[in-house]
Image (cartoon, rainbow, N blue to C red; front, side):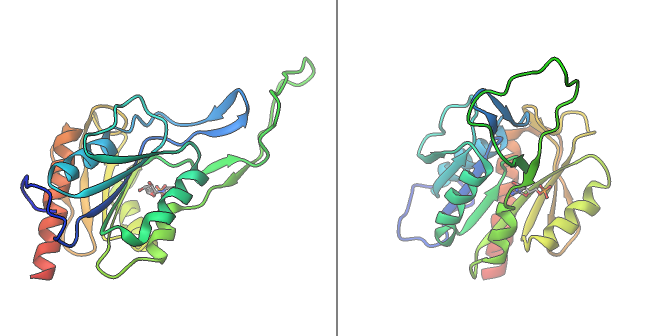
Length: 230
Ligand code: C5P
């Protein structure tokens, strides 16, 4: 995984990249789901940028409207549980993991096998939800030597402080945080992220299209790795 565009070189170590993207979709019944507005753009941009730099890239993606990026192995999943299985099965081979998916934190505890009917007697409906596995935290607990784990955090309040807490709790190397209250950050085509590492001061990147955010994240994360290993 070179810092600039380079032809693929299978003999070079450190170039297996696992990226997750998009929302997950949790079934309530055969006709309804719980999901979120993630478009997958950030994860697809990272996968494409890493592949263009010569990495061998696997993209585990929830349902999105995006075309598969060139030269990337795409694994399509629906639920958080399926994403967890796909990611954990591939974790030992990954030198870098970018966990950009917006994974549902809760899923219906007992999805109905047939379509639920509305009733005339009840104005309220209570759905019983249970926690999904925290995929990234599990990766952090099994982190391979030399593996670089990158998380993403969407925050609305105390963004940097919360992101620092997640970095520590999930045993991450980096976390890219964006504040949903910032204009242009979050679910749209652009993003304004702050990159936090284990050490050093937070790096605030400007508002830019997600493809450029992807390049900037790769530049910084790779440069830090090269400094560490040289
Ligand atoms: O704790 P929070 O959900 O804000 O953390 C965000 C990071 O954790 C993201 O990188 C997201 O992909 C990941 N995550 C996960 N599994 C979950 C929830 C979040 O891997 N169940």
